[in-house]
Amino acid sequence: MNYKPLYLNKIYLITGAAGFIGYFLSKKLLEQGCRVVGVDNINDYYDVDLKNARLEQLKPYEKFTFIQGDISDKSMIAKIFEEYKPNIVVNLAAQAGVRYSIENPDVYIQSNIIGFYNILEACRQNPVDHLVYASSSSVYGANKKVPFEETDFVDNPVSLYASTKKSNELMAHTYSHLYHIPATGLRFFTVYGPMGRPDMAYFGFANKYFNGEPIKIFNNGDFENDLYRDFTYIDDIVEGIERLLSNPSVGDNDVPHKVFNIGNSNPEKLMVFIETLEKCLSHTLGREILFEKVFEPIKPGDVPATYASTDMLQKAVGFKPETSIEEGLQKFTDWYVEYYKHY
Picture 1 (cartoon, one colour):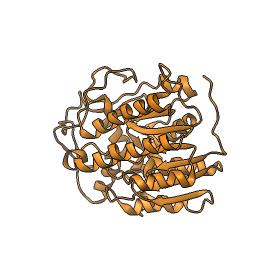
Picture 2 (cartoon, one colour):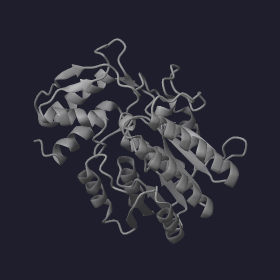
Picture 3 (cartoon, one colour):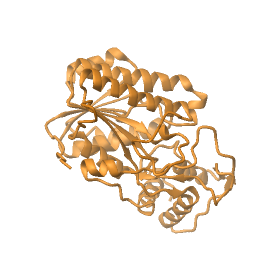
Picture 4 (spheres, one colour):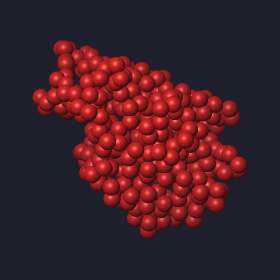
């Protein structure tokens, strides 16, 4: 391991800066005195107020510049690169969500394919020290072998979202090969925490409870063969990214491109996660909380298990996520009740 600490004198361009991971990463870099240029289109895929609340917390930092725009706008991206000359680019802007991609395929091609192509082109025209970009655990598709390792075969995605993320990895590899752009892809595993995405299951469960509605669990009520998820707390994700920023990959065959899993490598049954969420919410509110549950069949595009091997990340930068779901969910429920005033 030849780990270099964060470069404080570099300019960081973070796309998706009003998003969940983008906000927390921007905040961490700004707290250390880095210059951050944030880009986000603030679309209405989920609650815009939450995106604006995140941005409000970044605006007081003197070294933060925010630009509202879409990465699929090629001329805007080119202008940002020419004006701000970023040294390190973190592309977190993407249309997220597996189920949403079944009903709204167009936005995935626009943002995840065309948008990422624009970022790669800008890095080619304006050379950068490092491009870090979001991939996803969904690229593993319905792989049966666990834990998932970066060397596994990933040519059988089961959703359009997963296809776009696999495409990003291929595109980045090609640009690294042709133009020697140091690039690192990150396969995130079910990220959760305060100020998270309302479209994620744990957030939706809390919303349903306070709206007096039952929660839907897509496992057919089969507790023996329940869905497994590698839930990864936001602080662990951000630390993993931060450690990689100043450590571009040498890669294989002289192509400076590598892909890493960032997950908890400790998968939990979905039902255990739900029970822990109930306990944490009970603790926050000081009374027993139990969700009303409705069991339904697994949805198209969902995978039965996600389970990350994080050995490569640990070897590269000496980091392994370690936040337990008890600790992480307690922080989420404390924030949730405060933010939505459910005292």
